[in-house]
Amino acid sequence: MNKNRIYRSFVGLAVAGLTMSSLTGCMDVTEPTTVATEEQIQGSSASAEAMVMAVPETMNEVDGGFIDNYHNCFGYSAMMYIRDLMTGDLCQTSSGYAFHFYYWARNKYQGDGYIFPQYINQYYFGLVLAANNVLGSVNPETTSDKQLGYLGVGLAYRALAYLDMARMYEYLPTDVTSNINVDGNDVKGLTVPIVRETTDQEAALNNPRVSHEEMYKFIEEDLNNAEKYIVNLTDTKGKVLPSLGCVYGLKARLYMWNEEYAKAEEYARKAINAAGVSPMTEADCTSYTKGFNDISKWMWGEQLTSESDQVKTGIVNWVSWLSNQTTFGYTGVNSSDMPFNMIDRSMYDRMSDTDFRKYMYKAPEGSSIASKNIYIPSIKDLCNKYMPSYASLKFRPANGNATDSQAGAASAYPVMRVEEMYFIEAEAAAHQDAARGKQLLEQFMKTYRDPNYSCKVSSTDAVVEEIVFQKRVELWGEGQTFFDIKRLNYSVTRGYPGTNWYEETRFNTNGRPAWMNLTMVRNEADNNQALVGWNNPDPSDKYPTWKENK
Image: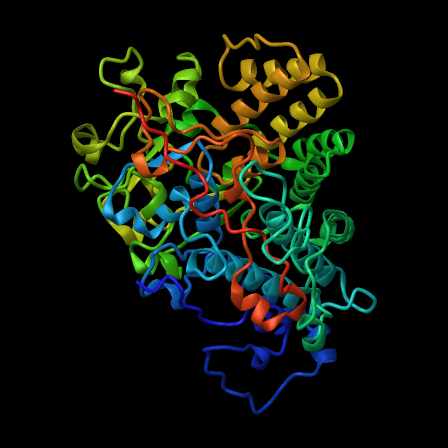
């Protein structure tokens, strides 16, 4: 396996716009003999709709450049999984098969010369390209209401991509790396370059990382315009496309990142009111046919079908990697040495036995709540035989089909759930008034998760930590915890007596982990002069593994 392999230029991807022939790198391009003019493209609803529907395809693309060596290349849901593997919440059992993902959990090969940061770089700028294609296909001054709706969708997707990247790449202080990088430059607060639909090749070749403040203004502008235009969207294609409520939700995330707590609280409540769904019930969450594979229960999701490239691969997809209850997936119940996904034991132990979310993880032998675990009947015996304690039962294959990859992998995964908005609202309130945040948390928990719940703390920091803990439980496996850990400078603790993390991943940090300041791949600096000397420090191997005293 060549960890240094570089496939194509991100600059070429980013500035391609509507002219696909400007892609650079290892790609064969056939020049069209008839090319639509910019005016024709911008005046065509069919063209705009095609561009819009290409974005969900990008969300779920399988990258052919990576698939020969690594089966971690299944688009946005792979990004979600990677982020959770970098926290202290989701751990894999040790297995050879886990090598497709375990370098992120092991904090190895995260520097600018390796394929692992490259895939994240490449994927996100490809998503920006897809969104920019939508924006370039619509002229808001001359277009129809229908196309204005598409414009709102494109802006929301671009905001989603940049908000994720900004929070992943922004350098924030750690105790094992310095904001003064090896080139002597101060990278504190720097995010990523901004590529607009109007960015040309010359600008892209000298396009610096921007500050937190500049990125914030850019994303807010996109979301303000999305809020204005997306009201014209009449069909979200079954929640595959974002709605106005999702734009509000993105704003709530943005304002939390910028520590504008009053605005975050305001927009989280707007998102809740506009969502059109209620928090999932116990039956929704634990159903062996519909548990966390039903897009109708969420604000925004992605729906795979039998025609999706991910599904056709059989194993390079969300279900193969996130659902322990299959016989076809990488984390399936074929033997005891599969890389099962588990919840951190200390996190599990902290959950109340009366909180039904605890039932979504295999209870240890002899536990009084073991009878609450619900398995897919056709493979229940295999789950009992091979699946370790604390293994996830949360994500199910479509319709509970555990044996047929073409049916079971044709599932859905969540991009935004209304439950997240309740927790953002509560945390934002707590930063302003701890008692009010505590009240909102208790109200949500008692109503929707655990009728016996009581928040036992009262100080601002303690209430915020409790809210974030319950949010971590709620959104386990959904790629959001990374952002909260990094934002709040929380430590990750994987090494402790009785831990279920395997040895190579047992890191204990003092504050946010250095690996949460992602590096830009070297190929970017080769194609963008402004990035030379301005990378984040390599976090690889900066922490010793915890050893238990025996």
